[in-house]
Length: 429
Image (cartoon, rainbow, N blue to C red; front, side, top):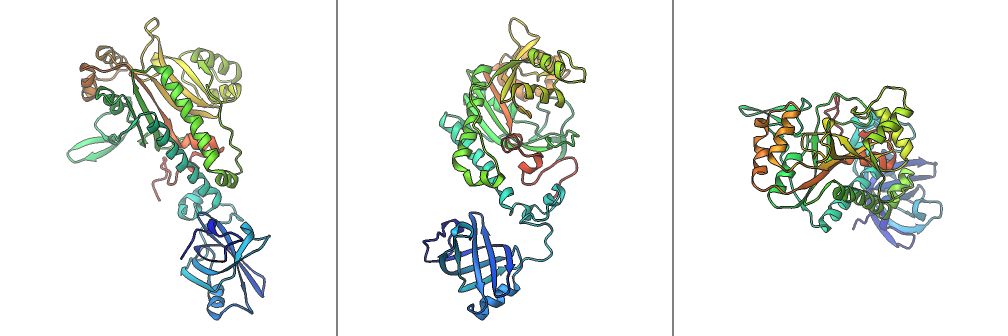
């Protein structure tokens, strides 16, 4: 019976494994094969004077990245991966691999990112690339564990909608029978509606779509968002929740993904909480002192400004107390100064990871803010209706999964953090 390669130890007497031929070294009388599955690599050595004809024929015919079944006795070999090797009594080619390969899985010949993404099914066979997605899976699991343990309900919201979440034109229109509809920018409106439903604590991990014409290393047009909404909470409450979740994600990866981190050459440091709180006004002053481009109070933060502030802060941090004019209509203004709102961005020194706020829960004020943004309240009637029927105070945030993974692992391009990226130019595979 087949066993995972990681379960084959120097003390194992016999083993049968199945996997891909990672590497072949033919030394004449000996041929070394490295066989790989998702758990690891094992060496198998074919001795031409001792092997059966069937084994010799398979060893001659097999190509790299073919799927094989190998079975035989195991012996301890200090120089072999994992300190053991299998002497094959059976060597079966289960599924041959065509040659030449579109890219080199052992990475002796580096491929550019477009080539890798075009042959993603091969690219993810590389242990270093697979490690990224092992870690991403662990981060997702950690998110569900953390929020479920704190009493959150996991919800699923529509991805086909009739109106923009935040207004504007950054939407993908789709033909929806006799109507025009759009791919959703965010679950924002629906998770707020669930506050009216009395759920009190909800979260969702799901896709969001932004029709922004970016072509950068940190933007995608389809991304994964981790979204949270909490009743009877303010902006400070959900900032604490967010920083605790991020620290938990890092700690869980450090605990469960040691091998994957080794494959990536990453030494993970768990961020210390609480994260510093930096008011927007102070953030603008830091940026203005460090960058050449003009920036003033009321401007959004450019990439250069974010980089300058991140260099100053040197760790995860929050930018708080944003001007109401540059945040979405649902952000709660301060009672004593409505020009400032209870919104925040959670930042990594490289970039923004999350945006959140205490939300407006008063119907009339929300209508005023929608109008102030130049939007039509009639377009948001389905959203506004629950605010007439006992909407509790609430707050929440959304965090980008890909940016989180990108910054956690020091990746150069956000496309490395998603299996099949969707950007301005790529819709296949």
